[in-house]
Image 1 (cartoon, helix red, strand yellow):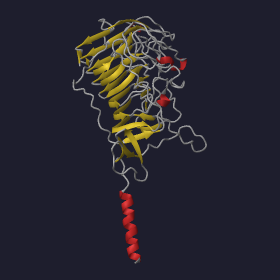
Image 2 (tube, rainbow, N blue to C red; image 1 turned 90 degrees about the vertical axis):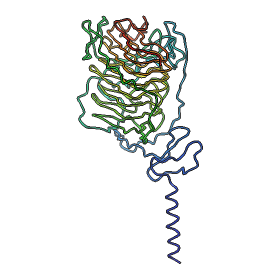
Image 3 (cartoon, rainbow, N blue to C red; image 1 turned 135 degrees about the horizontal axis):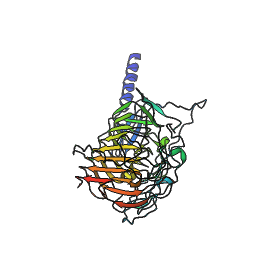
Image 4 (cartoon, one colour; image 1 turned 120 degrees about the vertical axis):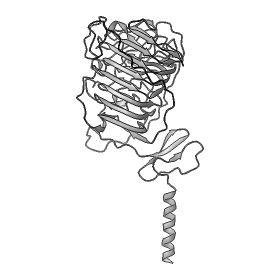
Length: 438
């Protein structure tokens, strides 16, 4: 009799274990009729309305000791603002990303905006009030998790120039702080860049565009797993995410409301590489690069304030492959100096692909944007540049469904609204070759 009872208990125990979904298995979603509880050490997390699966949260190292256990965070559910305003370009506007977000669609098809239909205004200084005043080479988040520590290069000075907005057809509005300004000369005399990323001193040819493979599409890979973090993940050296979905464990995205490094999911040290990663919608600031960086096959499911912020003082950052969706403002915010190369990248429903800061207090150096093999649909300009500061944009062998190739501004370093002075290729600051309709 005792043996029979033990056998029954053992069988029941096996049934209970089998009734729990294993790590990475589906545990919920619309129409799901299988198991909804997860094995010990994991929990059921929704990826979208149709699919939830069992994941193990990333353990986060607290850099700031508080002498006791940190208070458990309460999940805050904030609906992500995804306004898409369509407006005719009027040559002026009220976009104001530096003081709270750029207003919506450029008159040429800049998709969406947060403060209501920027008929033009470009808002310089995305991080005015942004990176919690800790930019000159430092991290703003008080809790950063270092996931890769191999061969960390020496950090460059990180000009967080208080980023500039992207959706505009006319003017920028900005209130950047001194702590968020690049350290280059404040001279506003025109110049052209050299490829080392130093401030301009003489006229020179536009940088050579590397072109692209021509095989870009908007198919986001299926996640190989999910990693959740309660604070930005610090990367030194390199991180290959193996096509896992990385996101914050609570929603920090607040639309076009100003944020900073503390709202990012990754913070990359100077020279770091991030590859094979899918970034979810909970984060607010995507990826922050403190110096030059390389992003390879990095996908953004839904851009919040912006996807990528560049703070390098010189040199070249490279974004190769990957793509981004639903950026009501810009995808790449270029606050530093030097060059960014964007190759074989996919953009859909966006305001601008790349925007050079138009009114950062450290303005005076050139920023070069080099675009090749890009496919951009349902969006605005591929680049917004400040011609009087020596900025350049080169577009080669890419396609657009609508919008503009370049928007030209007169930048400043006093936080004022940069005036829009033109659009399209001018043969010097903006050159275009092989741009077709998608």
